[in-house]
Length: 138
Image (tube, rainbow, N blue to C red; front, side, top):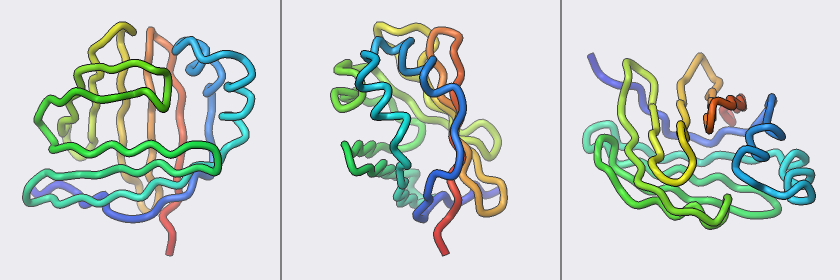
């Protein structure tokens, strides 16, 4: 069975538990307050044939770009997020993209999945789970 194509532009429409997630990453209170006000846009380019994917998370404050091949481990620079680097692998679990980020924080990673015109993101670190939902731009 073929995998879904995640390509598109998505605008965040809801989020939950982000403050606790950011605190678990040791983000200071002032920066957490700013981040909670942001409404990121995700621009995703995905080639299902090769597994190449680029996720651009864009805000008025900071941008973050993740460029990888599904199933291949790479060193991820999380400097724009929390100043860390980690060994990252993004793999398929059914139709979901599951990311494992091995580094100083235990249980760090995320899962993306599509439901209709919505892109769901669940972020995890040290037992804390935050969620964001993005709606695909028309």
